[in-house]
Image 1 (cartoon, rainbow, N blue to C red):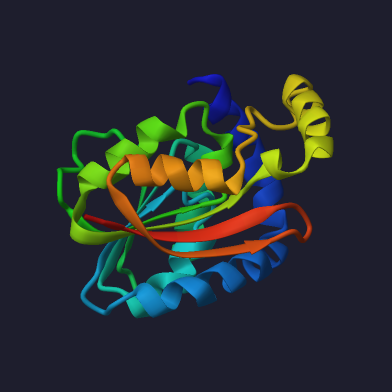
Image 2: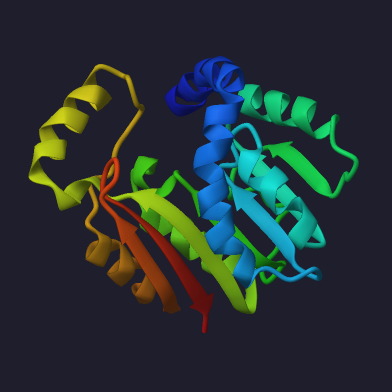
Length: 206
C-alpha cells in the first residue's frame, strides 16, 4: 500500500462522518454535469471517494464503474450503495491503469476533486483519453491552487505536514493546455474563486 492509499484510507473515516456536507458540495458539480449525461452512457468515475458523485449520477446514466485507490473509501461507498434501490454502480478498489479497463470503453469519464492531487496529471489525462470512445467526454472539477500566490506557501506546508499527500499548484490555463495537448477539445470552462480558485471543465475526445 503506497502513501497516498494509506492517507485516503484514514480520511475515509472522516468522510463517512460528514457525508451530508460532502454531498452538498458535490450536488453543485453534478448539476453542471447532468446536461452532458445520457441514459445510455457507460461512465467511469475516477477517484470516486465515498461514492457521492456516482450516487448523484445514478439516475442519469446506464451504468457507472466507480474506482478509487483507497479500500476504505470503497468500503464506505459500498455501504451507501446497499441502501439504494438501483444497483447500476460497481465500486471497485483499483487504479485508472487497471488492465480490466479497455481502450474506447466509456462514453464519459469524470474526475472530481482529484487532478490537483496527482503528481503528473498528464499521465492520467492520457489514460482517460485512451479509455474514452471517440467523441466521449472528460468532465472534471479541480482546485487551481496556482492561481493565487498566497496559496502556494500554505499548501506547500500542508503537503509537507502530510495534511494532504500531494498538491499540484496548477493554473486554469495550464490545465486547459494540458488537456488540449492530449487531443481533447475544450467544450466548457466554468471558474470560481470561492472558497479557493477552482474550475469545472468539460472536454471531448477528438
